[in-house]
Length: 321
Image 1 (cartoon, rainbow, N blue to C red):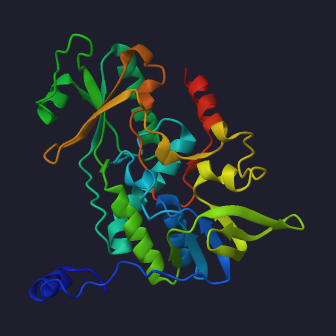
Image 2: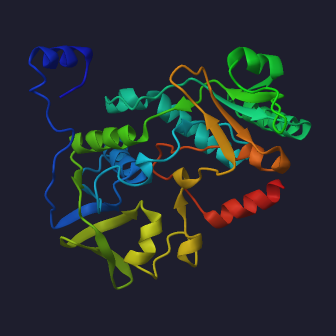
């Protein structure tokens, strides 16, 4: 069923009795070309794009609980590409472009709202850091505007501009940024992947990755062994439990193993958002303007390879200082 205003009206006239499940409750097959461990945003996006862009339909997504039960259903809702470092800028700008066409691509309402993201600055040092970041963004073709105090006041008059500790002096605005409902993103990707033949299996925990002759041949699950040509692990923190010797990123311990980038919600930022707000404003501590100004709230991006190594992030912070 394709969702549209006509289907909504038709179902309303029928008392909403004709809606079908968003995805199938698939039964496991003995073998797949690709098995993806983890039914969150990253795993489902990987399955969707493998089917859509690469024509790979013999794919299974295994989730030990229900879809969207992990971080994708409870992380920060902000989407943005206002980054300084060249690698980050290109990565998240491509993600922003995916967000902008995601609902049409999936035929599913993910509640993408491009109301803008405004990072506030409270000191001259932060202003200089934001000016540098805004210039870097514009050099990469990303929209950015540096606003002064009065421009911010005109946009968000309800903010406390004269706070004794954090007086608002201005902000860096990306108008294309905004918010999204992340569990709806998981549901939309699941629906899109299912329509392209991907099997999505819930309540199926992967307990081990089987290796024969130095090659991965399949996965052991709570529902039995499943042979696979390739295995993609999109739930990185659980991987060391499934196979302690397997490290996709070369990290040496669970504490430093690769995490999805959606887990990068900064505890040092404060976010204000309401349905009527014209922008999402974030504020970083002026006492750590060296890198906190570039580390406000982050959001999941709908890309199959959205993972970042914690060790690399630590090095980036040290370099930024």
